[in-house]
Image (cartoon, rainbow, N blue to C red; front, side, top):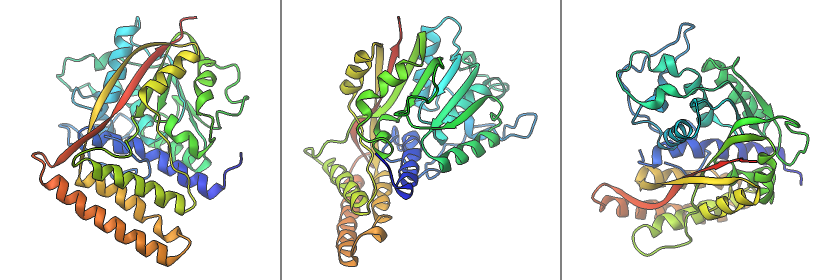
Length: 345
């Protein structure tokens, strides 16, 4: 099935910001949409002016090496340390790359430099990798990630390739010690619709025996719930309606049990999973509302756009009222997850 280039570009941008949003909504300080890259808040880390000997600014990478850094990647690192002999990711395949996963990869490549002046006694020092290959389905994203790889000083540590997983020739004959599937499943609808049930078979063919595959994803937001959290359920439904009315494709997340079933169908052994509850404040909700607003200009009629704009105004007002009465200004709804799988034969 062909995808309009403009739609693909929009979908790719939509994909690249789930990971950025994720880094902030697990505490709003973790994930939902991938179209707002660069808008997440980052905590200040002491010594954050770190640069390597070639002038590469590593300050944005320190959060991955810190004991209080990115929760999902910290779990992936601990799992790798505990499940392998030398804590090496070996040759790593990032099956659906973006700014967030590339930054983590760079943090592993630069790990010794990042922790050179740290007094933290943690296992983060142990992880390393031989090289990486990163896949994206869109040329504009490939250029963006390639530029970021240069900025992060990892352009000589791996390859960034454009391709789709429904192309049987992509990475033909290549094997990897580790495969990272970072919010890829939910993004597939934007590039190769209806291929989700085949993706793990496709990836398993590139996983070396004894290798590990890590899946990070978002548990789908329910259609409705009882209580204050229902406002966010309605916001996500209206957001998706705006995306569709603009002629673009929504991403589609899959639940944890679906992921584990299809990993096992692909011949992989599920080792463990971890869930991370998400807290949504007004800032997080407004980001989704603003994403919806950005689609109004593409609506078929101004009357429809104006009517939907009023719906979004009401949701914004309700979201502020709901979060303002919470003790911490946030509601808890859903979770992100990481699933660890192995190829044993």
